Image (cartoon, rainbow, N blue to C red):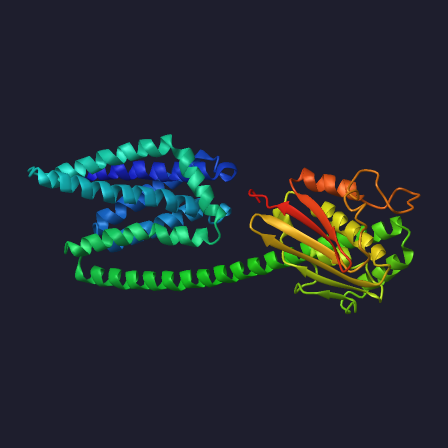
Length: 418
């Protein structure tokens, strides 16, 4: 039986050395003498400790610890990577042996077979040979697991710690069967308690670090959103300046530019009900800087829920607002509001300017219709284009006007896939 144990130990040493070297890929040892030396040292370690001191649990830990030291010395220049690979294949082999030996023993015991211990040991030896073949056939899968472990933070220390876990299972099994000496039993129990305490403390520390990283990620996400909003506001302000310059409204352009520079000062004539004052409606009305025009904004809709680009919607709103300012003759109040109504986004833009005559109110969305003397033909989107663009996104626009108020209503369906 000792010769068989020695032979199995040599097979295990060959498996451990080859799998570790295979996992290292570009860092693997190419000198066969070193590999043979590693196999010899692991074989001597695995057989001699057991032969001299028996199969006590302490011997299992001593053998395991010496094996890690041997692998580290042979593959030392590659630091802890070979130890991770060794711990992985060691855990696979020990767990396989432990599980198979217990299952086979239970099965044989049910059949009341004589010499059950000898037969069980024989089956365990055969199962190990089968495991060696499987490990060599599926070594690429083992290397994938090895790489996955290396990709995880703290994996090096954890895989080393976890590799001792099967040793503790075997030790507890020996203790439960009363085949462990009292001194060895006490040493194992003390080591197990220390092992558990160490892992609890270490995992708590890891959890604390994980919570801090999660907190920092939330802050980073918030800052990214804030920066995106700043970028969007910047783009819309630039577009607003361009629109004003394009319509030769240079005084308004100057006033808006001053307003952008003095971002943190109150505008004085724009009252924003939304908390941040950075909504699309607010941005589309910022250029209205006349002292006699007041703008009330209540923006409660998420325009990203529609299929229309925010830039197109911005230009539509600014077109209607500019028309409203002219209809009011630069004096009065504009009310811009948005909200979500069932499956639609609704935008209302109202002003207290002059009533649109009944004979033209049904024509203002017609192509080519205008009441302005437009020489350069470049005043942004005309109302016909506004309606065409809105209808392209399955929306609709309507206008109603009387002696007290003129109101444009835009209804856009919410994109279900958004």
